[in-house]
Length: 203
Image (tube, rainbow, N blue to C red; front, side, top):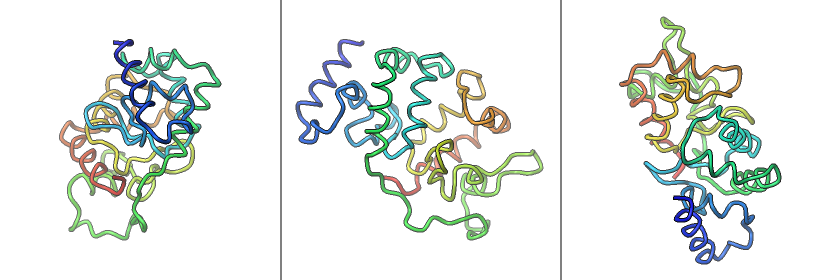
């Protein structure tokens, strides 16, 4: 597995005109996350434009086992602190297309929202379930260093991460909020909200 990933990343580096700008530590990453950082559905999430500190924290979580992933843990173990910093900063610098004027809460009519959009914007306070945009920003464009972009993220990845928080195989998020949120969602709601954010903005 490791040999095939390294070979693929070497081929990618040779094929890319902008490879000189890529830190050598990121070579193994682009075989899945791509040189654009936008990843691929059912393989790797979009990480372009994410805050560098957020990406670095996730790599550390993979190394420590706070995030349990059979592919990412050995990849992260290959990076020392300098490699994590260089790789995170490079992916953070990559451009990503986001909504020009993302709609804030109250600017959308609930009657015109899909089920996933309604959950993302309104939550369900009868279940003490906050809206996603309360932390992740309007249309999921991300907020600060701790709440990553959801806009344009692959639906399968959002689903898998919500299920990982439910199962306890992912942790390390700000104030441990996500496990509490995820455990209040049904499988149908997870699919709906993931589909909504995947349809927004970033392409």
